[in-house]
Length: 347
Ligand code: 2P0
Image (cartoon, rainbow, N blue to C red):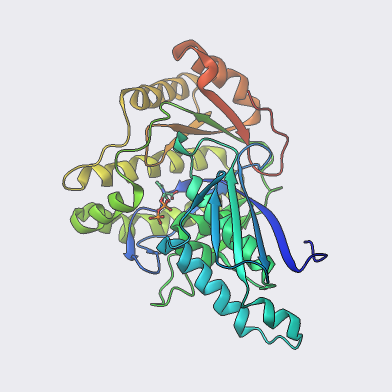
């Protein structure tokens, strides 16, 4: 926070998150309201994060935006949705201080960057929009939860507003005021939990999540079944498993939910298939490994792309990394990171 010049500037960071109960489908595309609740962990910010600096000044002539060093149009509708809502909330606040109300009319310059490759299929939009909204909320002194504003940028972004295990509740209201992020367990709750990201391909995905979800909502009966009959009870079980630090249950639910999301994609017409042969080989390897071990030692989950994300406990990281190195050499495609709040050893 720098108030020494004729303006104001704030810089914040936000984590990426990896869902263990997946968001797949919108019931309202404009407000970005989901068809089911979802749950993720926010990862450590030492190596994977978005950073945004937002500034307002009397001297700025118009709103401008830079992403990863390149100027982009600020007219992007999702960015506008966030910016308009932030300014509306800022105006709602009563400012006795005239200098502050004047600042609301100044233009904003926003500079945002990720320290990881956008094409790697890691939820870059989630960290990006969470960071944008959080930074703007600090710039304009907005108090309280802003996850519903981040949600209007990108659904999964609302979960990146908080650290630890975070649930995005489906909500019931038409205006989306109850479709917000809530912390299920904070960053210190399960310090042994680790995440490994296996970059199978760094190509851009062929079907965007937004288009994929829209097709699934329009054509998949299985999506409705999942939303009504699976996710509500599975969510309760998952929260219990996290609260009790029951890794066996956590791993089983994580694996099943990833597979179900991809089954909904296959049930979409025409079908969407995000995984490739390597993704499926990783799945087979993990099931064989867990069976051989006599218990679940590692869980996989896949988003809208072929890259695997593994959730496992610290004590099993060496064995699992050896296993991957053996079956999938070379090993330079392995990125290791830890859940937010913990030491990171980036291999
Ligand atoms: C998730 N994904 O829960 C799921 C699992 C991908 C697969 O949230 O249209 O970028 O911006 O709301 O948030 C990716 O979708 O989609 C996503 P929009 P978003 O993490």
